[in-house]
Length: 458
Image (cartoon, rainbow, N blue to C red; front, side, top):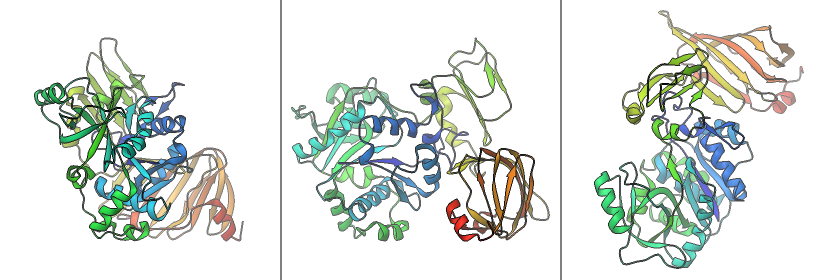
């Protein structure tokens, strides 16, 4: 059996902490058993490894999330990289091609798919293990997990089991149909009359089932070829393209804790501390949460049932019941002001465009001990670095020097450079140039070992 976690999303509903560069699964707002702040993906990966599933698990994610994934859960976790976002059908098709051609998985191998960010108990993953036996016993094309509802909700889709089929000894039922986010009244009737289940997005199939679908659609079965044609795949969900068109589906009911932490009101319900970062909340502010990622303190007085989220991207003050509407109001034309990278993090402090076309950006950059940025040059941008913390090794056009807090470095345009942190580094970087420089970055080497090998003046 192979377990594949889907990691995507654009981070719209948890703005301003999440953005195109840092989706909700990477926000460190939950507590682990040692009361340390962890992200959703760190929490789920920890549960998977505790259940003995780490060695058979993969994460399917976009190219833009690769560095952050490595930073949070390590480079040992195998990633299946999407070249661009194209919804869940394309992601799962790419996953099937990868397992078939790169991992040489057999057509009878069971593949279980689940989101990367469910908030569940550890025993939920024991249920995921059972999907292999359910598929083999039932002969179904798809086996799903459905959560027994604790209340009629209009936020979730529903799996409606067949009225004639009772749960058998293997713990599954035949699926009759699906209903997407019905009204609360309709959801109540579905639960009462049909024992309908919440659709938590977890399902399994034999690899041959999906390989057959790729063949029917004339899509490549080899991962590298499908990557080249990825831009031609439809932007459509796997539910719509496959699940709703498939006959003989079974569902295994799960009676336990499960929650989708996709909005501020649901996420704050599971936070162990209602204050993260600088600030204070008055005692008469009931059920109010403050998450502050900047150094300016925030005070909340006499406001109940409110979430206040502060980041370099912006400030949100919202009634919790209204917080899901944030995606309809925010401006996404602004690029991310904070990013996690494989080597550390970068925060934009100031971004100014002048009448003569010059763009001046000031950043605070942190490089983790032992990490380095790539050996790179900027075509139309110069930089001035002021090192404010730590020590490291710096190289510029093959010339090596040691640097520490207090040093100021000037990097002209078209100048190769890299830096490695011997202790954790923080640098204030002022970049100046013309226009958008993202497409004018040239990277030669990624690892410090490559830099040492190819730079003869070290």
